[in-house]
Structure formats: C-alpha cells, structure tokens
Amino acid sequence: GAFSIPEVSKLGTWKITAHFHIDEDNVASTEFKVQKFVLPSFEVSIATRRYIVLTDEEFDFAISAKYSHGENVKGAYHCYFGVVDKDTNSGSTQKPTFIPEMTLTGSVQDGAAAASFQLASINLKLQKHMNQTLHKLQQKGSQLYLKVIVTNVQSGEMQEADVHISVVSQRYTIDLSRTRTHFLPGYPLDVVVGAKFTNPQVSTGSGQ
Image 1 (cartoon, rainbow, N blue to C red):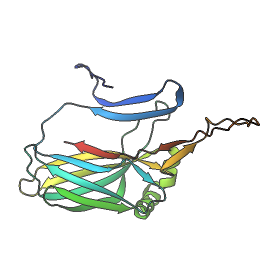
Image 2: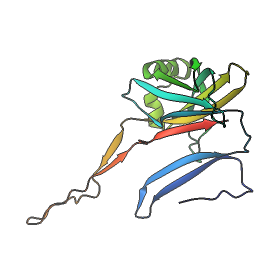
Image 3: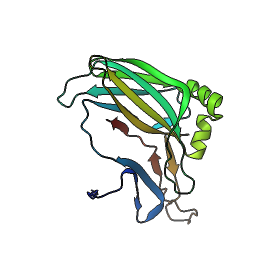
Image 4: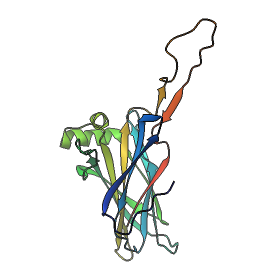
C-alpha cells in the first residue's frame, strides 16, 4: 500500500509498524526520514544488507557516487561507525554514538567503491572504547550505524549517506507454534512450519 505524507508534517524520523490482523505478535517495523529536500551536486548511496550475523567474519558493502545527470564521481570516501540505542520508553532510535578509531578510507573510481570491515576489529573497538560487544548490542536491540562521506577530488565537494544495520544471532528463525501440541490416533498430524528471515533484502542507504 501507499501512505501519503501531508505537506504540513513534522520533520525527523518517522516509524511505520505493520502486522497481520490475525498475528499481532509478529510485528515488522521500519523507519524513514522526513526532511527538507535540497538538490545535491551528486548523490551517494550505500548498498548492503541491513543486518550482521554474530557468526559472520566480515561485513561487505558497496558505495556509489553519481551526479543526477549520470556522470560518475572520482574521489575518496571516509566511513565512520557508530552505535544507535533504542529509547526504552518510546522505542524510537536515538542519535548515533560514534566508535573512536573505527574508520575506513579508500578511493572512489568511476563512481563506485567496495569496502568491508572485520567483525573482530569492531568488537575490539567496542570493548576498548564503549565497554560493549556485538553480542551485547544484539541482546539490547541496538544497531550499528554506518556513515559514508565522499569527496570529489576535482571540486572538493562532499556528500554523505548513512544506513542502520541490525545485529542478529541467526539469519532466520523456525516457528512451530501453529502445529497442534497433541496427537489423535487415527488422524494425520499436520506440521505447520514457518520460517522467518532476518531482513534478507539488500538495503540501500542514501543521503545528500
């Protein structure tokens, strides 16, 4: 379905929650920003999964930087990582707290760059500077925050993009709650298995 944002609306982060009318326990939610649009000289986007599995060794993402007329940007990128906690009262996400010393840099060629970080490295920085680990973030429902700034080497202009990344213990869960808990002799037992993936889609975070 579609939801029209009224012309007079509050700027900031909006949250949408949805569930089937017969299954109120499984609620899905997502957040998006409402802000004034300013036409950028070029746009930066981040293509990545929206989750990290604790058993992963590294996390990969791709950076794209292009002008609206299609020209590719040549420049450099700087990546910054942070932690976003949830407000225990309202359930909304708070502003990110950046992790000291956790940065990545590299070049953008033909409007694109590939980057990755080791989970072991981010765990070390979390423990050293914030007394946290990815496992603790997963237990609290906190998210990682990735901010990318791209600089055009010819003009010196900078544009940025960001994305929130969930931390999960497994890629999917198995649900047998709809299977009968008792067996009647002479009647077949139907086993109802539900598999729920953890944000399997590729996410694109963009900014200006």
